[in-house]
Image: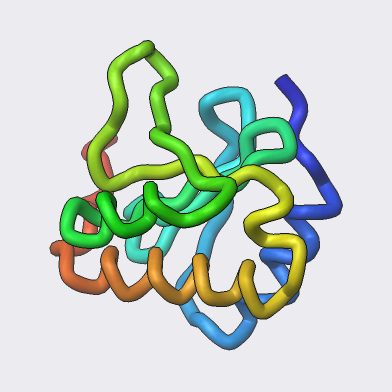
Length: 114
């Protein structure tokens, strides 16, 4: 599945304010990582957001937000946001900030040994 390159560019435009962000193609889309931890991604034209278990229930009550369920089993702490939910750049920036705030609470991922 291809991902929305326009959305990728919008995310890249928002992220220069945040250092240490990397990109990785995975899940048939594009993921963004901070300190080796995935915090956001694009699958098709949908935004994937890792907001954490504490914010999960509140996020699901927002319009255009649904459970992230690649395998048929929802992943707690991760949500999909459909395009109307990040139509405005300020809305997209809020999602990115929420994701980054959550992953800051986690230990950095250690690189795999080669």
